[in-house]
Length: 297
Image (cartoon, rainbow, N blue to C red; front, top):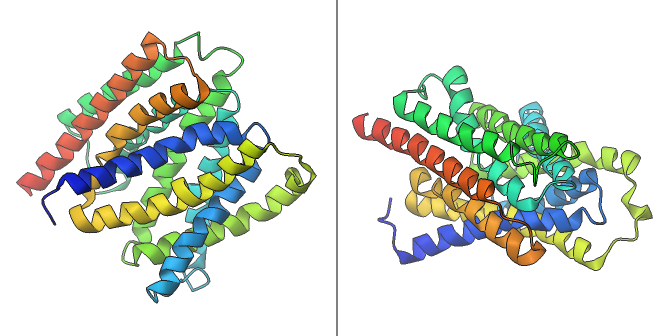
């Protein structure tokens, strides 16, 4: 892998900015669209650039091969369910809180990986990271200004959605020998197929009279945070590897809080800032432990 240069850090920052921008755009999309419709169009528009990349690189898409059930399962768990839960939660919760709650994903991944993988066991450093991140989330839920009896359940659904990302990631390990582009295209295709009939039956989006800003945000969500961001992530992985790319998790909640303030004038309380700091510190210790394991291996 290359030694990261200024350009590589720029790419990493752009990726974090695009992913972080998803949260306030989800909020805007919820002004007109239901959470199922938002999830469907995110997956549909996200599939387009990835499928075109596979066609351009002549990579076979195996969505309907003998492994179709794996792709369908991962597409449902890793895309359909979390996309729906996040959109459902953001209806009543500030987008900056969603960004921080979703930043806890690497921490929950560390806990689940301990039980479901052989090589990624919890040690003292990881424990410190998990406890720090957990403290940040608990503090966030104790902020009565932003999370109260009316939206507590919605905040919980966002946190629940982040857990499905982790479960989907663990399932993806079962087909990790396949090309990334093929796997991503296949799970996007199956995600769209699974949620399409649900969207038609439950929300019937053709009956809506959506606002222009909601429609623009919906299209943006699919093309950029779901499709283009994945292609950018793949480029960073190719140039600098997984450890470097994983640093994006430090930046997403920071950008998410800033963008929510700029575009939606969202409140930033002291507890939000402390929770943000705690989650980032928690992720730092988890990443430090992984680096130590790689060095000693």
